[in-house]
Image (tube, rainbow, N blue to C red):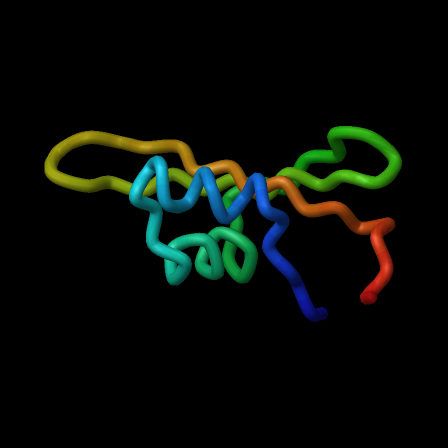
Length: 67
């Protein structure tokens, strides 16, 4: 499946200094997938970094078509 980052997602990636590689790991190998609403899935994964645990959540719109 192809994914496209929204402007909001791109802004958050920059603001939070998130690696796009990590985003793909969350999508490819999530710990859990939740249904947020009819068009949104939330992929979750916990990463351990420097003795801390971080929960990454990636919201994916499954209804939006390719433009």
